[in-house]
Length: 222
Figure (cartoon, rainbow, N blue to C red):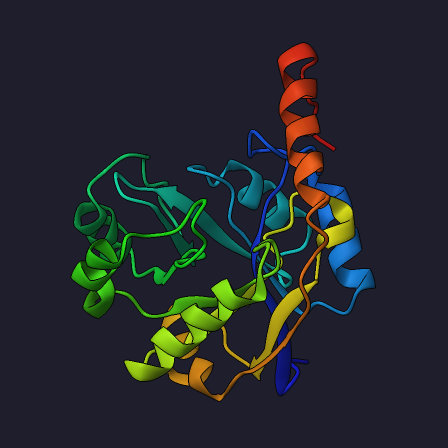
């Protein structure tokens, strides 16, 4: 039976990202244990990990992708066809739109990995949402800037843990009326309530460790 209100983490990574060691089974188990109703798996430039997670728990997992464009990153949900990295933002958006995906913008005001304002303004009318809370932002003000930017333009916001390690899963999300498709998500996201806290900056060490381990040893599925 579908719940009337769902807790959704819109941004997380699995072993399919170069900077994460989290295996699909671990990701699914941790999300369920922490009361997450929907988890968008958004690996860097691939949907391989998300598809494996969805095989394990079709109700929980939404297939997504964090797409590196020539400017910065887009955060997509309900992806059915992988979008390659390094395309111009408008071309990446077109490819996501053509498959009916829901498009948000990753951590737009994080100075280490965000968007230049002119580049962001060029695409703002072509996306569905802005990521207004990313738990991996080192400063709360970067999320506040995104929240205010979205509010000024009447654009709904997504929130996510951006988890690369198990401890981070569910750190940030939104409680939102139930939805099953990208179109339904567009209709209800504006009613969502954010529940979030920043992760410790130390979680970034987990990503560096993952990259090191992958350079030394292959990661097997599990």
